[in-house]
Image (cartoon, rainbow, N blue to C red; front, side, top):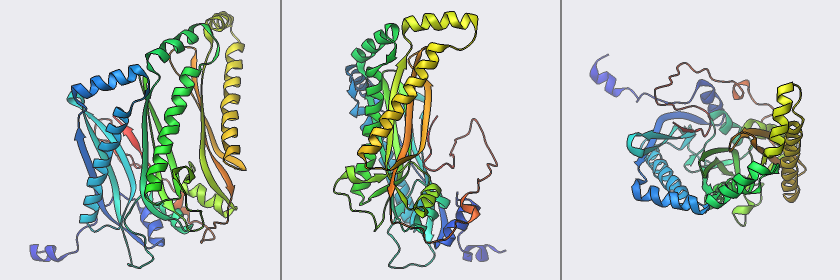
Length: 393
């Protein structure tokens, strides 16, 4: 082929979307487009780090860190959107965020995604959109009649403070049972991050956030929580009067499709945290039982009590939300603050009856197929395909 003939060829499509994603999106009238990337490199600086440290020691919400993360992610998002508009994309699918730690305390905020275009332009097509879900999952939302709007994000940095750490540490040493100083800190951070995501979705005109994903990181006294999902709207759902009225779901979009076909709809994400400690006396009992072998009865009782406690908290939230049941309940158990202190976290989706129904009688198998990873490296830059992946190197 001559150089002149090559230049006359249509531009090559370079897309991160898979064959299954292309198949499912084409069913809804969308075509894969450009690979898109936006980044923003920034440093908090010495002064900012000192201010953040004293805020953490004082306890409470660390707005300096939270605003730093939010503003720099927003800069990366803005650059990706500008690149999408320049490439004449109608939307961005499978957006993923990553924070890359460079030398000298420099952070790079990175956002990637796959551009898509409508096969036929029509007045019924939504405006430019960005979603955290995959192409297969966006296909499910479109089949249910949802209009995608944007990837919504919320973050919170919260510290229990030096006083909370000391009082909690004394309780860890001498008292068994729940440690309120830790439980309240962890729950406040998660609740605030979820609310900020709702506020961002509400500002975009959404009445529903799908596929909510939560990530937590502990940094000494500080805990950072990030929450993201796909903000969208549906004509059959009530218009929210405030951010509190925006409905949320932690279920996958495939599960949402199945749920609506059964006459149910997610109402809100419900979650609970409890930090439990064995205490010095029970630690001694466990030590003696461990020498002899067999069941550690004190630890078994603590785990059982903690599970019941978080499940009770989740149930109470679901009742307040007017839900009929909680689906997708997950319980995570993680060691915290040293030996004998354990974090119990329960997370699920409260659901209610609904009139929203799917348009297709059945989803094609491609909506459920898992893509094969053809190359992995522990050293190279990782850009996982998981919907809304938030990775920290």
